[in-house]
Image (cartoon, rainbow, N blue to C red; front, side):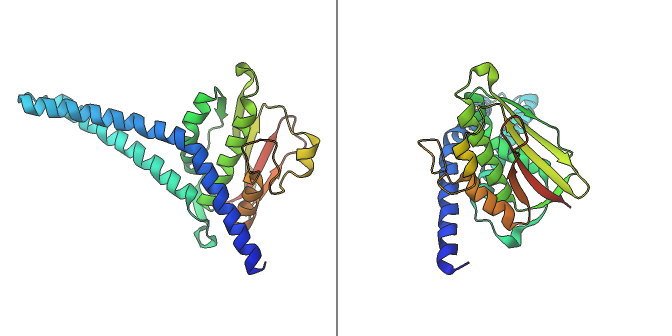
Length: 241
């Protein structure tokens, strides 16, 4: 790849990540504001008790525990967002917990899924299941697939908005499948599925799938559309560690 092509690719990746972060921002703000409100509320109660000289040891212990819990929650959300947004480096491919990555990605998508009235079903992932991956690359691909599905599902009646995240363990690999109950892909989209700027959405640059495939392939994994599935299904194939 020439220097010009590599520079263009990196620019497209950066643009896609910025767009994804922009989509996440309102939901993340909500997810962060809730625990901050709890922290402020608990702190005000403790301050009031101190000023009145009526500190309840039980309430003090309970409030400090709650404040710590909420602070940890905010910290995890911010850390997950930092990992998603950073540049994906080949040197950062390592053995990582698949369950932890999926949970952290969903922590950034929870509010958007809730507001879209999507029924999300997640297959339980064993905590000991590790895969060879780059956190930034995998999390970007997962989030892109989730957001693509949400944009399609909101056009359906509320009782038909379903999103499934499942895993299948093979001898040496793990398959992550993202499936939705949407209307499927039309012929034009299918023919250019992983091409840049291929989109049917007026507010999308059409780079999500293209960039996701590049990032996943660069770490030695596979990213495909399951043409045999009855509903729109994308599969990421990772190596077990």
